[in-house]
Amino acid sequence: MTSARNGTINVIDSHSVHKITSGQVVIDLQTAVKELVENSLDAGATNIEVRFKDYGLKSIEVVDNGSGIAPEDYDGVALKHHTSKLSSFEDLSTVTTFGFRGEALSSLCALSESVTVTTATASEAPMGTILEMDRNGRVKNRNGRTARQRGTTVTVTGLFKPLPVRRKELERNAKREFGKALNLLSAYALVPCVKENKGVRLTASNQPEGGRKTIQLRTDGTPSTKASVSALWGPKSLEHLTDLDLCFSVETEKSVLQRRAAPDGGDSGVQVRVRGLISKFSVSCGRAATDRQFFYINGRPCNPSKVQKAFNEVYRSFNATQSPFVVADFILPTNTCDINVSPDKRTIFLHSENNLIEALKREIEEAFLPHRSTFDVNTSG
Ligand code: ADP
Ligand code: MG
Image: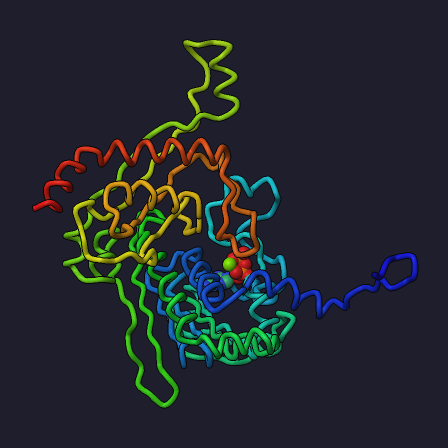
């Protein structure tokens, strides 16, 4: 074993540190795409096109009609911890943008063959500037000019080439990884209300090596989850779904203590609202897969595994043959959740999580109890 006493503790050179930490921010193809699309949404884009070449192995390009990047910000755009969205730790509890750490572009620069940003603000359009970045996120060439309406295009080629093991994994599982990236794009397409109720037109295409470009997914920008479901999986899929709208309060340690002290008054806990869509219990389309389950906290897509488990458990007590399609956005006070838990921001820490899960299970059960008898009749007949 090595220790400080025999002098084997060394400092890792800064370039390696950058690669190591970047590898935690951009884990796979899906997180690379997520970071780029989130930047477009943060820039207020209403039209976002994601172009994959060879399932993302060759390149990923995200084109948006957002604010564009102002010339005075070019230098900081892909430098680590440079962000236009947060300036102090105090802002973190109220942050409403997807990004806030200024790590994504810098990480993509460290982990890819090349990153190019083409951008124009309203005052530069219809001409845009092409910024070629180096591995450290510095602009190595800013002399390129091209016709460009307001917005930004980020092109990433050769993802993970600087990390040979991860690159091999990506190549081996290219189609599966691509599928996961499309699934994640669906998650963003389903919450059109993320930004001031503005609909976002989202398109994803792929051009396989030597093949033709095909559209993989497209929404029309109507600001409604139902419209997006219909665009993604066809209008018929809506027939099997019903609205989800739950409202309940969750006990916290503070509310329990306060109620003990003053039974008639005090804190009634945290108010939670859950909105979205869920499969009807009577549906039996034979789908046991859980790949169409989308969860959000205050409009931010995330993977709350205990919440997912709660939905599946209750649902299966009504309909044992399948898992439900679920879109569920949890609307919570921002001071009851911490989004800064994991580098990819997909894990969110929830205050009083166990109490929330218990209350959620009761609520789903109650909301759907009237359907139990209908389902029993349907299946026995
Ligand atoms: P973060 O999103 O956490 O700020 P990023 O590394 O993802 O960090 O982006 C760095 C900065 O680059 C952003 O704060 C933003 O100012 C700018 N930026 C990145 N992508 C875009 C885009 N598509 N449109 C406008 N600005 C962008
Ligand atoms: Mg970002």
